[in-house]
Image (cartoon, rainbow, N blue to C red; front, side, top):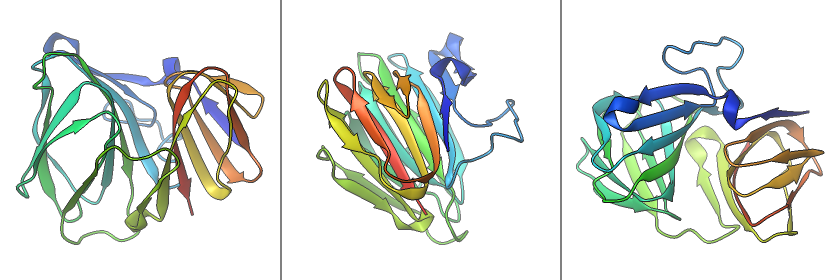
Length: 217
C-alpha cells in the first residue's frame, strides 16, 4: 500500500521572525496527531530553512537516531560530545543521541540553508551517544543505521531514469528535488510516499531528481 503525503500537507513550525522555517511530515510539537506518529522507524522528517545567522540554540535529544541531509547551504553542528562540523550538500550526518546529548545547529554562512532532518526510533533505548559524517556520499551507496534496522538509499536520477524502490516491510521515499512518478502518482519537492510491504515498486524521474529512500524492517 502506498500513502502519498504532499509538501503542502506538512505541519508548519519554526520562528519566521528568527529566520527559521520548519515543515514537519509527522506529528511534532504542538501539532499532535495520534494518527501520524511514525512510519516504520521514522518518527520525524523535517524540512528546515535557516536564514544566514539563524539557528537552533543548544537543545537536548535522547533515544533517537538523527540523520541530516543538506539540500543547499552549509550547516554548522556542535554537540556536547565535542564534535563540531560543517555539513554540506551531499554529506550524510548522523547523531545517535542514545542516553542523551545536546547539540546546536546553525547557519553560520552567508547564504540561505535548507536541510532535511529525519529522526528514527532505535530498537533499544540508552547507550552512549555517537556521531558520524560521510562526505559526498555516492549515488546508490546505501547508508546503514543498524540501531533502527534501517538503510538509507540516496538516488540522483536523470530525466527518464528509472530506479527500483527497495522491497521491504516499510519504505519511506522523500523527494528532495525534481519530479518522479511512483505508483501512478507524480511527486515533487517535499512530497513523500509511505509504502507498506513494498515489492516490485519503481520510481521514474520526470525531471532530474534527488530522492532519499528509507528501507526498514
